[in-house]
Image (cartoon, rainbow, N blue to C red):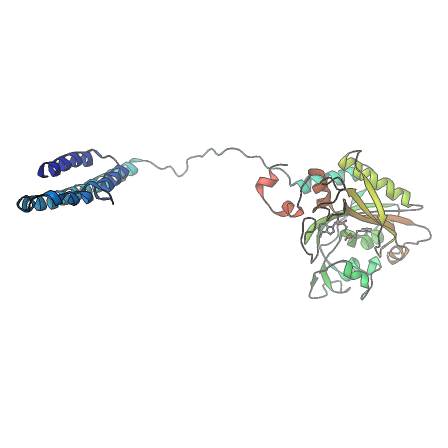
Length: 346
Ligand code: FA5
């Protein structure tokens, strides 16, 4: 047994001496003192040793164990000091240039789309007009033939802001639609009026795959003598064919909006289910892209235009819904998520 203990001692003292890293020292430590380590296991073999011999083996074992432990402790210290010296030798240049892989950014898919729309309408004589995101009840509702207390106000889940603001024309609110530009625009310009208004709208919505609380809309008005539903039909198709290609299936169905008469909903065939009905279109088979119609005579009158002389058409489209359809995006919320993995696909 003494011989075995001596062999272990010689073998491991050499191994410890040769160890060049903390990792190696830890390995040797475990090999010796771990759960099934050589030193841990050794006393189990003392059973067959005579009492006489044990008087020598016991102290030898204890001494060897201590020596090995001490050797490991000293070696660990040496290796640590050595590594500190190595680190000290390394120079660190705080001004060094790091070449990161180049990543080029691009405009958000919605911005790209909206710029395309502005350009599309600019080329046929429409100008851009801007209305405020924080507006009053007058421009968002009253001037659009929705007086206070009118049940149609419930069509828009509105976020109100306390206070009347400078204009004192009803309470302040976050505009629910870009249609809030109509009264201002018609007061500012004389017909023929051809304008688009693109921007952010806000509603207290139940969120799902096609509803956001903060989303963009683009509205359009064309006011002149003898503007008719035929112009509306033509312009709708012009836009949708430019965006989705000549194959796009579009339908117009009667829809009530207080500021148009007659009013229409403009739908595109859902490209996700090809009209069968899915979670994106809410099982309908068509995705509602816009509200539209002929500007209500009362709205023209409120803006100081003679409804017997002029007529007009109006639209309010949801660009996010169109980008969804165009790029087969299943959930509108991805567009505002800021998720780079998603945005880099565009
Ligand atoms: C309006 O907001 C009307 N101002 C549109 C209008 C303008 C009608 C001019 C007639 C004349 P509506 O609430 O249906 O209507 O919204 C119009 C479009 O905005 C919808 O078809 C849809 O594409 C988009 N939209 C509406 N709500 C949301 C929402 N929560 N999230 C994303 N897009 C929406």
